[in-house]
Image (cartoon, rainbow, N blue to C red; front, side, top):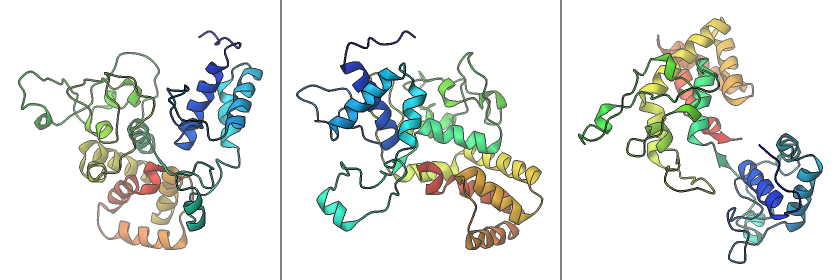
Length: 276
């Protein structure tokens, strides 16, 4: 892809603003597709200009800007609330805390597959049609979905390759605010609704991947304590506390399917679907 013209100051500003929005949930300009008079003013105009200049100076390197933002003090701040700060800046425009940001549905699905060790990382090729319960679309005789069985490994590709049909959305992606394919979306909706928890509990795909995740932990760790530690490290990027370990080991030991249920529970923890 050719580099954008460096003599147009709008291009790098829009570019870095979208990158900032991805990492922080909101852009420096909170109307990412409108930098005109009818759009929002930038909360930090000098920062926006500096980032745009930095992008150009580093040969339009996106990796450089990602690294710069993620190593910043603003990105590494905690998400804790402060009553005093909330009264002064309820919308967090001054970035006094790290905004809480839920992962997109595609990333959640890919993360589930990655934890289970079943993610197909092959690049390119045709789209795939994962399993969708026929009861969700057979009420209309004009709607068809030639989905593979839920345990077909050929459908375990990144969500980028999931076939998109407007009238039959994949439930796991749809419930987590996947945009439609009709209009351009400058930013994702971020809803919090009961069906999100229900689908992570009851969806056949999620349940199957929990079994695969349990099998992976059984291969990689020989004791319940080690399996809990490995599961936490893979799911959350951290070690469990002493209390978490004790409760998880007791939970696993309580039934023959305890390890599978433990893995399923990890998929349903807020820490898994929200950026910590």
